Picture 1: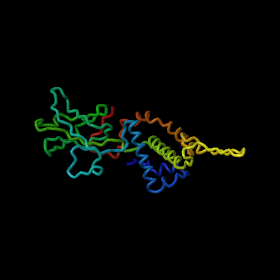
Picture 2: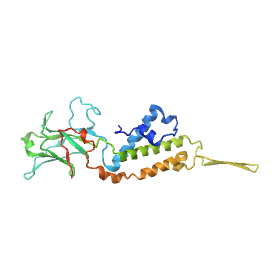
Picture 3: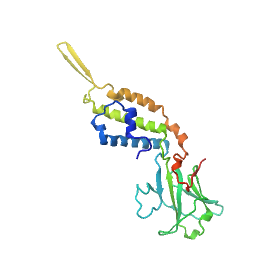
Length: 258
């Protein structure tokens, strides 16, 4: 699933305009290949920056009949209930995933199929701790409590312009590299030479194949541009931001920023 304005058409019109890449990159199958490359570039950026750009719906104990990918995206684990210590101010629940943008539902599991929804109003989520703090009075009878079912949204739900460009250029470089290989008629030869009767003919194929062959020029320009986008440094700009906050539910618990 791509995000926002990052599409195969964006790459074609911005970075591959005027370049005939052949039958393999045309039509619906070509679009699908390019979208796969873009998805891989987004995943690479997420790994480097430790940020989710797509918004994921994480649920614990989904409703009967709920369909993965349609009603939720990620299935989380139940958080075991532990009785509070005498000096403990609240329950501090550690969620499995990072980059949480909203806690949408908290239920107390009391065994079997019994779940009691809790009021989210007095709760708070700490970004620094990655823990949900629940008041002690939210559990009136600790003897019946067995676990916590916490549902939440993680991920920014948007792709910043710099990251979009970084991903698009990366995909374009891959396409040009593969396109150069497809157009290579040298069969692995760098050059051919024929000498006969004092006459010498020499044919050189595709330029420097390691630099991109026939597309070495455009690839070099794109690589230089991509090198200017330091996504590791951009990590500190976009970490701990709500991203597309307008799409977050109004009755959720938002993170407390450090």
